[in-house]
Length: 349
Image (tube, rainbow, N blue to C red):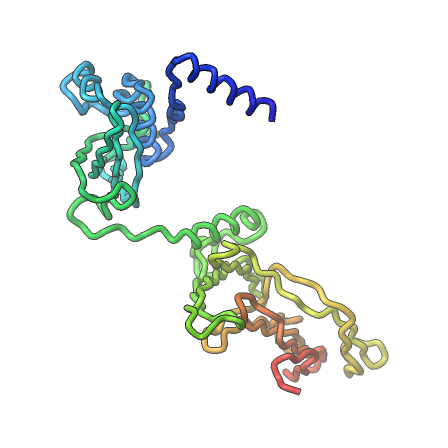
């Protein structure tokens, strides 16, 4: 509180004394990690009047015939705001070329604002074929023209004559990152058919909240199933869901803890009883899949290869989540498939 008071007092004292109060300086951004970051760094330098730094973001093809002409072009400019659109890229002869849709709002020293829009092309030379000195991503060319649209709507949909590039699937990218962060060392590196682990099955689910009004629109949830590992006869998978409230989160699946009694305490003998004595959660499901017709995820864990002993769960999607509604157990190692239902929230009483 004291620091805020001192700052306010200093501001007041300068104003009373008739001294000018300087606007906050534009933030310093110098980032060459991506094409978009280079463009933002360029306009950070221009807003801070650090023109040598701005000049340095361009490659051999400069934006003016010489540095003095470049600086003179910004004589009346006070600051520049920038927005970027969806970046597209293509490879050619040891380089990657990035096309970045851009809109800027330039404010002159009298406070007048002008919006410009267009595209920048940036180039990244393959680092493995470079020799010193190393050249990071640089601006190869760019052209901006005055725009009639508001700054917020002025970013071009795409660069060039082709169709707009597909928008990034943010939910899918977040799910991939979450899976990699948790399971990259636990799961197999490839699926059984040789594909890299990390590309999930995806499903889109629409539903209405139970208390939603009749005129309210449906909500959307994305479901992602990641293959994890393959054993002799069981395959495990990890699931994530995404919605507009919680973002991406991993599904945890409830399963009953069982007390199974066999005749003569012999697991090869007749099953006398199966009782639920508690519940636990599992972060993976075995031999599982999603059925869009019933909006259920089903799993079936074989206790041995022939499948005559197993446990199977059914998880129903409702109100934005998956709930355990049925659990079947075949506890008899008798060579026959004869499960019994030990938990049933599917069937009305």
